[in-house]
Image (cartoon, rainbow, N blue to C red; front, side, top):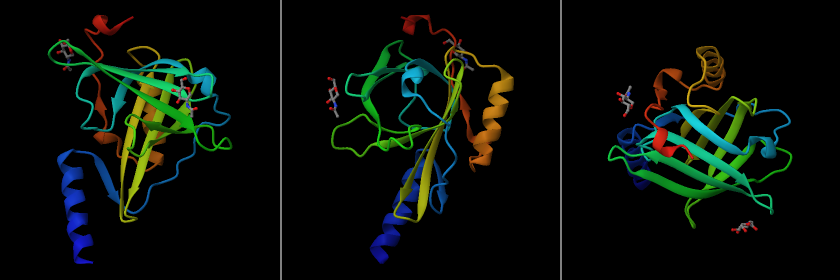
Length: 189
Ligand SMILES: *[C@@H]1O[C@H](CO)[C@@H](O)[C@H](O)[C@H]1NC(C)=O
Ligand SMILES: *[C@@H]1O[C@H](CO)[C@@H](O)[C@H](O)[C@H]1NC(C)=O
């Protein structure tokens, strides 16, 4: 029990240090996009806002999804570092339960457990709202959220609606940070 307490404090400290979003209790289960089509979701998405994630530091953050023949999705994330270099990482995403097509699991490293990727809502052509939450020891949960768009800007109107949806899912929208998507020509293909 003492060891568990130490671990708990350690995890809280780590989570706080990385300014991730952690809360007591287990993950909320927000509703996801109805009749989600992975095929229509493929292509490039630009990150407009996100819940702080320590592992993404650059600007001009974008993700390109490609559907492979075996039904898995290739994930290619890119961002522009402050030194002008493009950093990129490849991963794999897949739908684990066909009855819940808007719930994907993404993994970037072999041997590391995959992360949930819940598409809460998307119109496929302009915006997508993504939520990711992981339970830790059944004591607390850490969550992430992203507002993505097909272009580097999204109207305030849509952003406002997506904030409302996130708030309904229990996410503190004041913690969202805006991703810099200006001066990104270098990452445009
Ligand atoms: C799907 O296909 C890709 C590309 O050919 C391959 O790398 C991956 O291992 C395959 N995944 C599964 C689950 O078959
Ligand atoms: C975004 O990046 C551009 C180009 O590097 C820079 O000029 C601008 O100040 C940045 N904006 C913010 C809000 O940091």
